[in-house]
Structure formats: structure tokens, C-alpha cells
Image (cartoon, rainbow, N blue to C red; front, side, top):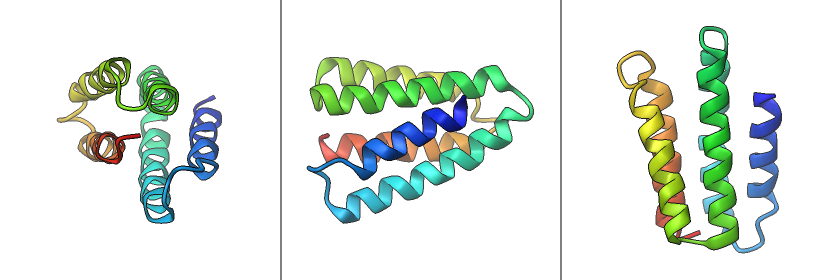
Length: 109
């Protein structure tokens, strides 16, 4: 399930016509980091991993559908808040997700 969600996000990024190759490569690299961290998390806390993948998917959809809108910012805030609880126990995951959020926000997707 998680791998499927991450693959869906990856396909949307790969097929985004408005994204430069440099931004696409950067996001795909971050997404691979997320995939690795979520995979590690899955072995210890599958529910949390599903939540993070779903929230990441929601942020990506909001960015594609509405650009930088209030709903995008709300989704981004929700994702950031959900991973803040993992700062101590999963610092690499938090770092990857935060970097993904910042890149998406800075792109003005």
C-alpha cells in the first residue's frame, strides 16, 4: 500500500509538464529518501507510515490541483505537524519530509 502511494506520487512528479528537470530531479531524489525512510518505519510502525504517505499524497494533490492555495498550505501544515512527533525517534524521516515540503512550497506548485 505505501509503496503504491509513493509510486503514484513519483509518477505525478515525473509527468508534471510545468516542472523543470532540475526541480523534478530534486523532488524525485527527496521522494526516494522518503521511500527509504517510510520503508524503515513500516517495519516498526505501519500505521504511522501509512499516515505519512497519505498526507504526502494529499499535499502533492493539493499542489497540482490548486497551486499554492489555502488548501495546499493547510495540507502542508497538517503533514508538517504529523511528522513533528517523530523528530526524536525518526529524525531522518522528519528531515526528508520537511525538505520535500519546503521544495514544493518554494516551487510555488
